[in-house]
Image (cartoon, rainbow, N blue to C red; front, side, top):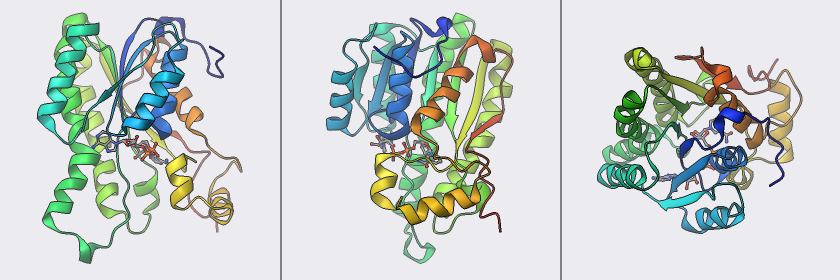
Length: 259
Ligand SMILES: NC(=O)c1ccc[n+]([C@@H]2O[C@H](COP(=O)([O-])OP(=O)(O)OC[C@H]3O[C@@H](n4cnc5c(N)ncnc54)[C@H](O)[C@@H]3O)[C@@H](O)[C@H]2O)c1
């Protein structure tokens, strides 16, 4: 398979799980790790996208495996991780990627919507990590990558619930890095800027919106899912062996509107 990604030989044959891997940035993670020769399992509720990606990657060294899993269902999540461990072995690299950045107004939010936002944007990162940490400890180490967001650093409008979760993910990253560092588990947070994914394009990524983003970025370039995947490959590899408990931005220097 032809790859546009940097190559990290130590990632070959690694057992990788990507959550929300069927589309967007998650799909780029799946492709990037598969291109390294890693054994990738990816979890998602988007069955059509997941199966299409699985089909696209069927000729990689280890064909990537799509597994349907609603990550807000903690029993299903635990069962899926047990099944992965039983069939392919313990997870060595976990990419906690799935999220849902629904715009909202505070006045409309019910208790149920609050819980749903926490469930899809924060809770599963903790419980997916809980599922893989024991085997990582037993194996002498592992890597967990959590997806944060530039959004709360910029204080974007109508995204409070999502931004709260993303801020929590940075704290979770530091807490887990502290607790599991002695077991050689590295935990880092990747913070994407404005990434042009299929969903963002449908929702709002017009040429006018992109011009506004460029105005806020130091580099006047579009940041693509593959750019985020390259950061993930580096952080998962031995090249980042001394990197843990930190946030890594991939955002073309997105500080805001530059005015
Ligand atoms: N795109 C951006 O500009 C951007 C910016 C900052 C941060 N991020 C973060 O990067 C990550 C990926 O973003 P994206 O833009 O690719 O998102 P996306 O919405 O395009 O994709 C998210 C994936 O997660 C899956 N998913 C959603 N709910 C799920 C559930 N309950 N169970 C299983 N899977 C579920 C979706 O089906 C989808 O495949 C997210 O954590 C997001 O917050 C993205």
